[in-house]
Image (tube, rainbow, N blue to C red; front, side):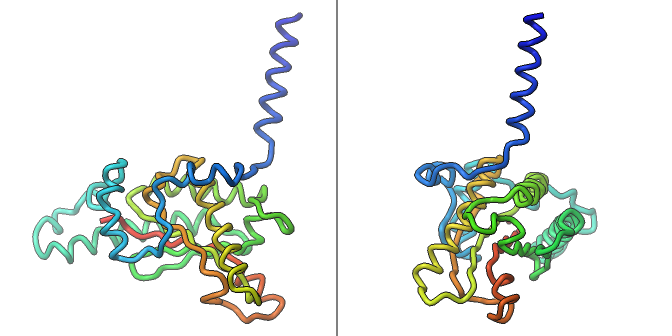
Length: 227
């Protein structure tokens, strides 16, 4: 009887823990979670500069993950590399698009890169600066895809709507981006893949009216092939 009670208690505790909503770890611990991430724009130059660190941390290059067709064994190397990267990113785009058919989320192509736009209210609590239950599910889905397509760099950029205080907008947008970065790190994404930036109210994608402001408060994930 005691054994049964112990088993039931363990089972109930496990069920409660499994259903507990996600909560970001204390802010003081964020530097530990984000160790290896770059707090700068993800440019071609910054990716090249980071490549040795990324490879040293177990990172992969696109060319080593794709079965190269015989037709690409010869010819111009740059053209072949571009073709391989395009194929890889097209498959990644479809996986994200197919898995993220939810309000407030869009998946787009930008050259060989894939951009995922996450409206703030789609992944975070309305009145609290933390990941929501829906956001936990969405980000976990993205994590699984990023783990499968791991020959990529990821820029996590936070944006706000128009705010009078530019410094406050920059701080808020960086907080949003860091929270997503911490979530990714907690769930096993290599931090050397990450570029984390807060861009404040710059680059609005909608009007600054009541509806547009909700859209401008967002996280953009720009995923680029590692090569």
